[in-house]
Image 1: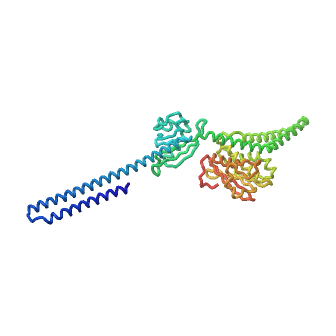
Image 2 (image 1 turned 30 degrees about the vertical axis):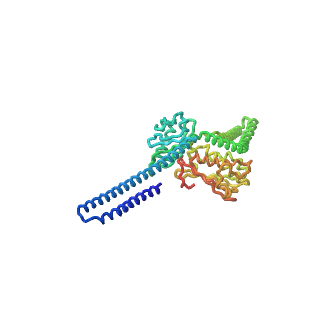
Image 3 (image 1 turned 90 degrees about the vertical axis):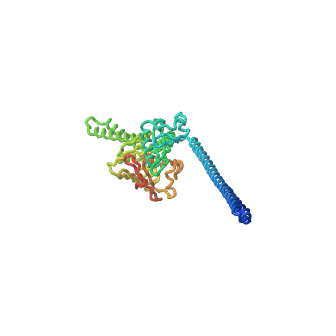
Length: 445
């Protein structure tokens, strides 16, 4: 198109100058052959000048017309290009909106005043309103969340508009669990013009995860059953023996009676602790955080595994201060430690040493579980936290233990890494936020 315009312009210029040259040549003979009479000469000169002025005017008009035509063509080309781009933009916008409307995740575009500027069909259908009646309204006037959920979401949106980057969080509203992803749409380097809020109802996914966790706990309970039965059988034997002594003792054997009663009470207390630990471990988690004393907590878990560890001739060492506490979800920490201990026990079928260390850093608590087992090959170390990855026989493992450990660490906002050498053993290093803050990526484990 542009080339055609240039050709037309050049043709006009050539024709105009050709006409001028031709006209000058036709006038030249008349001018050279005129008489010397002044009146006649003046008239001829005036005619020549008039003719040339006419030619100039003609050329000027032609050039002006050419320029105007070129301007017109240029604007028409620009208009056509702009129309094409607008059409492409509309098509792209329609494609984007179609993509928005085709997914079940809620897409909501919000301005700094928390006014909804765009949304998708999934969100409008979920609240039973037309999209046109939603756009232009305040987010929290439309979003039917509880006060606590709104506060969490409001805080995250405020940070996004302040230029603090993307955010990901989960919020619970009644019986529903939503995963919120927040993406600032920046107008400048430090300020967002709009924010894209993506809400995904993950209630079913979290329910399946809880069920998988509970199933894993039941598997662990089954593995513990033999050891627990043995641990309870011993106190029951003590009780039976001292009951026999009491029945056959004379009234004056007071010291024998007191010793028997004391032994029975200790045996009952030990059995109660074992049963309580097993029940605490097997119960369904409510994800409530509590403050636990790590030393007591770890020893209670070891007591559940005591028979298994003794049977396999595994020596256990627990190293750490008695005053170290951790604000965490006890059930999640139990699952993590139980799975790591069972994993270490499986790695030491011929006996060995299991060392659990815990220590406190500034704002963080560190726990490590180290065994002297067979170790993990270097080509497998990067896959051990993947679901269903296992090097055990099918009947001995599902491949979900360390996967669940990793997910529970994520839930507790912690970090876990593994180091291993074949033939020397494996160490798992964990770091937990002391009060629930997320550890820095640069925090050394």
